[in-house]
Image (cartoon, rainbow, N blue to C red; front, side, top):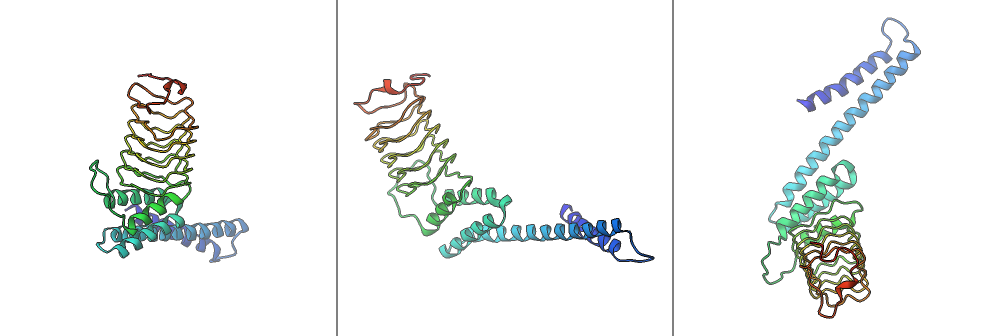
Length: 263
């Protein structure tokens, strides 16, 4: 009903504008002619926008159908179609990001089990690449198996990666500021020089991770397993910890300046 009324509005504006522009019983005033021109332009723009939005919706529908295909090539086509929709329509970008995130949870889920690692398919790798390479993307990689993923030197500011598996992942120099990494497995991850300012890592596991020169300023480390293989030059100013935070045997927790054993 709403769409029909929208189309009618565009046509009405256009017709009314033409009626004002075309003389009938005598010459029109300049103001009426100008107003008619505005109505024609407005009607045309409105109709174009409606048609364009309809095309976007149809393209999105087809892309999602392709994501459910049993054939990898068809799924890849759907992913590339979604990527192009996000480029063509700014208002569709968040929906596209959420759809790709759901696709990753479907194709590479992490449920807490620990089976032998398998090679991720090209469609999963492509989906991940599309999601992380676009500036300002709404990244939600929660419950995704990303073991060994190469995310080095990426900007993942504000990403939500809750209860995922990033064991052995390459995060060298990656910006993870304000990220939510609660209960995420980061065992053996390469976090050298990574920025985790104000990141939430509650109950995350960083056992055996390399955190040399990582910046954890104001990070939430309550209940976090921080038995990293290397904390040399790591910045922990203002980090929030508690009695559940685990440290390497040779590490002095007193260097963590804020709210030590706060709750």
